[in-house]
Length: 152
Image (cartoon, rainbow, N blue to C red; front, side):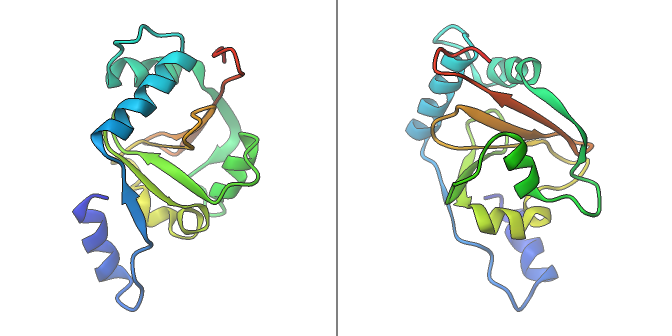
C-alpha cells in the first residue's frame, strides 16, 4: 500500500486503523502477470504494460455505473462481474507489478481511501485472474471475464 494512502487515511480518520492488507511479492506479481497474459492470449513474455493495454481492450464498459457517483458501491461492480462469494480481493496499482490483497468488506467500506479519483486507475481481481473489475481515472467501470480457455 502506498505510504501516501496510509498517511491520508490517518489524517482523515484519526480514530480508525487502516484495514489490514498484504503486499504481494515480486514472484507472486509475476505469477499474476503470467495468468493474465494467458487469459489475454498474450505471449508468455508480455510485460505489465502490454497486459494493461490488452486488458483495456478485453474489458467491457458497465453502463450507468461510475465510481464517482455518490451512491457507487464496489459490491455492485463486483456483482456485475459475477463475483458473489469472495473473502478478499487483489488490487493492482500499476502494471500488475504492485499488488495488495485486502478483505473484500474492507475494500468496499474504505473504497475512497483506496482509489483517488482522477489520480489513478485501479483493478480489482482475485488470484484466479478469471475476472477483473477496472476503475478508470474518471470512475468508469470496465469488466473482463475469462472462460476456462483463456478467451474473454
